[in-house]
Structure formats: C-alpha cells, structure tokens
Image (cartoon, rainbow, N blue to C red; front, side):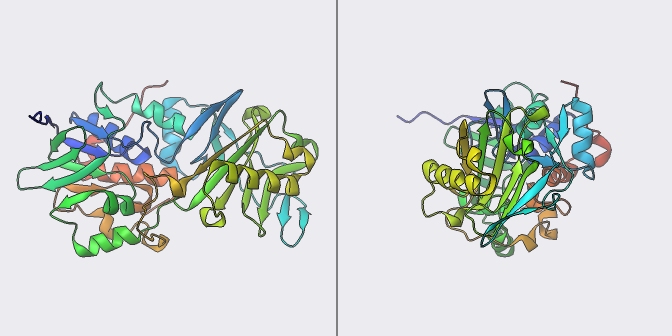
Length: 363
C-alpha cells in the first residue's frame, strides 16, 4: 500500500531560493507570516554561486554590484558585509584578427564585489529563515489553484498556501511546472519567450599563484571578437588574493558542453591574450549555465530581453501566483538589484509596503 502523502499548510510558498526568493521570504516572515521556501538545487543562491579556493572565494555566477543600486547597498550595510572594488588599473587587451594592447582600460567601469562572494550575501539573508522553512533539493512539479488556496506538489510532499511566489525565471516555470488551471495563454507565451539572464552563458575562472598581469601593467580585462570567450576581467580577491581572471562565452560557441572542453578553450585563449604565464593556472573552474537544468529551459527558445520587466509580471496569476526574478523587474533587470526589487515587489502585493520594513542583523 502506498503511504499517504503528507501536506503542510502555510501562508506563503516561495519557489526558488535565489536573491528574489530569499528577499521575498525574509520580508514576509518579518511581518509574521508563515513561509516555506522550496528550492530545486541542493544549495541556496540560484545564479549566485560562489565556491572556495585555497585562499579565498570565486564567483561562477553573479559577481558585481554598483553604487547606483540602493537595495544591495542597504543590504551590505545592514549585514555588515565586507566588499572591495573591482580592479581596474592598467591596460586592456583586444582580440580581433590579432591581439592588441589598449592604453588604459576602456572595458571596465567601476563596480564592487563581495569578499565572501555573491552567494555570501544570500547566505546571510537566509539566516533570517526559521528552522525547517527552507527545503533544498525539492523541485516543484505542479501548482493547483482553487477557490480556497493553492496546492504545490513535489516528489517529497504537498504544501498548501494562500499565496505562491514564483521566484525562478518565467521560462523555466512555464516549462517545468504543471499549472492547473493552466497559465493564461498570453502569460504562457510571455513567460516562454522571456530570456533567462545568464541562461545562454558559460563562465570560466582561472586561479593563479600571483596576479602576473598586474606586474606587466595589465588590468586583466579583454574583449575578444575571435572567441570563444568574449569578455575577460580580473577576478582576484582583495589585495590580489586569490589571483584570478574570469571570462564569459556564449554557450553556443562550444560544440561540447563538458568541463574539459571549456577549460581547454579557456586556457588557450588566456595564453593568446595575456602571454605564456597565463597558460599555467593553478586551477580552472567552469560553469555552463546553459546546461544547468534549473537555470535554462530545455525546450524553449527564450531570447527576448525586451520582455524583461513586462507589466504583466506585476499581476497575480489566478489571484494567487506572483512572479519574482530579475527578469521580471522593471528596474535593474539582469542584476542582483533587480532580483531583490522583484522579491520586494511580490512581497508587497501580499503585505502592504508599510509592513515591509526590512532589517537584517549584522553578521
């Protein structure tokens, strides 16, 4: 006999434990609502993914924030998070038909980074969550809405709540979750066509014993029209430790999406741009976000960034389902700031802004 599935009841279910989901969840918890966060991955952070290396942390996903992003700045201050400026000093490199050195650094603009990595910000935000509120490794299979509430089903159990916040890319939600009733046709088409930020990108980070490019007067920045990697930046930690360079490439530039292929192409291009010292990193780490099951849809060609922040994402679906992800933000879409704003917007449709004074204890 099959065991009866357990069903937990709560006020709000947040699907996704990235910046948008954690912001929405912690904001609502502080108003006294009961919240459950369901995350498909075995970690929090979503597209903010930081890993430890020998002498620091590196980011395989989101990396920067900027001075004109007030919500992130406020979080940094409230959590007392250590940050440091993106390294900009020195010349940049350009690769077209040949490699050229560009005087100054026309590639980079001033930005800031998190000493503990972008995921460190979200780890600190998540500390507000009560015990058993966060469920990792629990992808949502279906959402059923009726007159009383909404039923969210996973392989591990069922959950009921009055409100649902979809804090994952809309295209991913449309592909991987069965909705009953179905999403309205116009909303389904919009969601399927909305590009996933970072969804078509591969990122690679090379870690070295020292930032040798700085010794040669280089910033570590480069633009390449030869590829496969198109954009390079210094990814060293504070005071050059750990020493690192990272690069982005469109995932379509690679015939094979395996780590050895990405690493080999990255190493070869680093040597072309930054010389023989670049050919010998201590380690290389890669993230092909296009092959990440809980980032990029498999069967949807979602390439329309013009639908970022579409007004339809401000409206509840079936009166119970709200959208929250950086793609749905009307400001700073594609940034951590946009994700945080979208989470607050979703929370404000459940609790009035007056109830949502968000403060976090210093770590």
